[in-house]
Image (cartoon, rainbow, N blue to C red; front, side):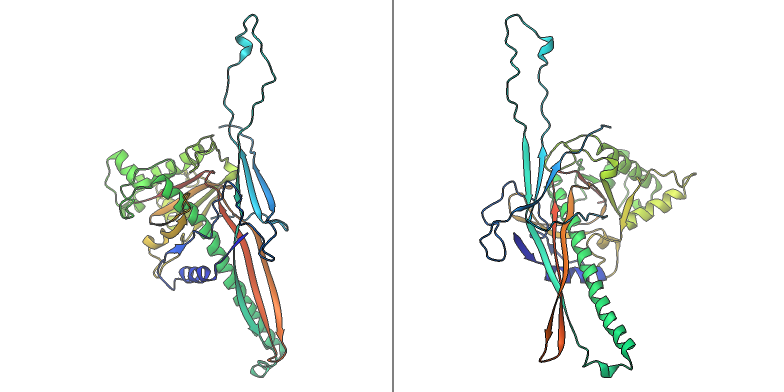
Amino acid sequence: MKIEQVYSLVNASTKDILGETDIVAQDLSNIVDIGTSIINGNNVDNYVKSLVDHIGKVIFVNRPYAGSVPSVLMDKWEFGSVLEKISADLPEAVENKSWELSDGVDYSPNVFYKPTVSAKFYNSKVTFEVDMSFTERQVKESFSNAEQLNAFVSMLYNAVERSMTVKIDSLVMSTINNAIAQVINHAIPDVDDGDYSKAESTPQAINLLKMYNDTYSKSLTKITCMTDTDFLKWCCIMLSTFAKRMSRMSTLFNVGSKPRFTSKEDLNIIMLQDFYANMRVNLASDTYNRDDLLLPTDITTIPYWQGSGDDYSGSKVAKINVTIKTDKNATKNIEMGGIMCVMFDRNALGVCNMDRRVTTNYNPKAEFYNNFYKFDCSYFNDLDENFIVFFIQ
C-alpha cells in the first residue's frame, strides 16, 4: 500500500480554515485516490516489504433501479488494504426469436453470453500525527492543588483533539474539492487562463449565471445576481430539476459515462452558505408560503470549500485552488471561484478505513511522557458515479 505523509498539508489547511492566511494552492494529487483498473506489482506491505497487499473490502455496484459536505464517512476493516469496487455494464437488448420462427431453423439456447464487468482498485492512505509531551513533577510547582494540575492537563488534551478535528475535517473537504476539480477538468477542459465566465454549461458543470443571462437575455453580474429574485427562483428550479434528472438512469452526469442513477436517499447536496442564505431570505420575502420553496430537501451547507481566506470574502469562500492527478497519471492545477453547490451520489466519494490511535513513551531520565496521536485514513473519488457542480461566473 502507498502511504503518503500529509502533515504539511493539514498544517497549511489549518491556517486556511482559521483564516490566518489567504487561500493557497493545495496539491491533492497524492491525497485522494481515483482508482486504477489493475493492481500493479508495487503493492507490498510497509513492514517486511515482501508481503503482497490483500483486498480488504469489495463493493458491488448493484443498486436496484425502480425508475423515475455532508457525511461521507464509510466503514473500516481490520485486514487487507485494497478497496475493490466492482460494477456491471447494462446488457444490450437482442431480437426476440419467439416471434420470428422459421421452419427448419435451429433455435439453440446453449449460447454463452459473457457479462461485461469492470473493477476499480483503491489502495492509498494518508497519515499524520500530532505529538505532545506531558510532565507531572515539573509543573506541580505552578499550581496550588491536584485539581488545577488536572485541569491544565485536560486543557492540553483538548487542544490536541481540536487540532485533530480541524485537520481531519480539512481532509474530508479536500476529498470533495478533488472531486469538484476532477469534474471541472473533464467537463470544461478548455478555458483560457482559468476564466470560466464564458464556459458553456454541460450536464456535469452548470454555469448558472451565464445560462440564465443567455436564456432570458439578461445582463446580471456575479454581484447583482445574488439578490435578484428572478434569478434565485430560476436557480431553485434548476437545482430541483437536476436532482430529479439524476434519479433517472443516465450516462450524462459522471465523468466515466457509465449508466448510473442516484435516488433521493443516495443524493448528497452541499451548498455554500452564502448562496443558500441569499436564496432563503430573498425568496421567502417574495413567497406567500415560505415553506413551499423549490429548494431540494436535506441540504448540507458549508461556510467555504477550501478556506475562509483572511477576510471571509465571497470570492474566497467560493474558491478552490488544488492540484489533481489526471487520468493520464499527470498533474494539473485547477483554480476556480464561484462554486455554489454540488450534487453527488453517496458512492462518488468516501472516507474509509479510518484509524485513530495514541502511542505513549515514558522517558525515565528526563521524567516526561510523549504521546503520539496518529491518524491514518483512505480517501477516494469514483469518477464513474454521478457528480454535478453548479457555479456562478
